[in-house]
Length: 274
Image (cartoon, rainbow, N blue to C red; front, side, top):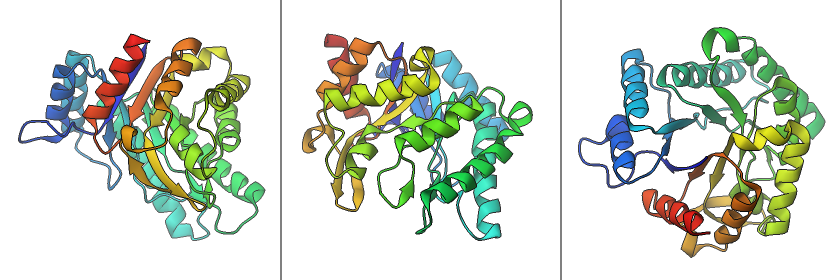
């Protein structure tokens, strides 16, 4: 099954708001998944995680997580490396308690370094974190995201290579890929090529549990600027849904539109009619 997820609690969530109420409200709207936006910091209350997990299970809502933005797995500074590692491990371990399926991580910046060197630096920290998988996050996927700026580590091939080695799956963001390429990756042919490469690295069964983001996006020669509502962008989102339908892609598609539930429901309903 392909779940369409809202990126955070829906805007129309009744007071007092928050994740638990957001899950309940998403369910009432017929939305079957939600990404918890832990982009500023990771919550640390195990009892709260238990409440989130129980609410999601009761409502039948699949959960994913976006880890904090303040991560650079290629930082030359030891203190920043350790802080990045801690934020990732906190998100993964709290995600385990909350019953999340996958955690999305913005990996790194190149910082003017050779991409091959950066790859090894990211890979080294990734391997170190994965040593704690059985103990801290046995059921949660550690997903590196395809990134939206040429200065950022996160091409499709980079995240696929690391994912294959450690038997996890990345977070595909076609909007980021569209912005990174200054307007390419916006056609059925290119999206099929994307999934072909995904399948080549991770196997056909991997397409049954993808973690994806999608939205409209503003961009320039320098890449991503900010997300846009679907209808206010150049994203050929209906064609993207056709590719998902034809290839029978399963998993979670997080709609990162600023309109949150409105565009999530638009994508869900359009997909259902195909």
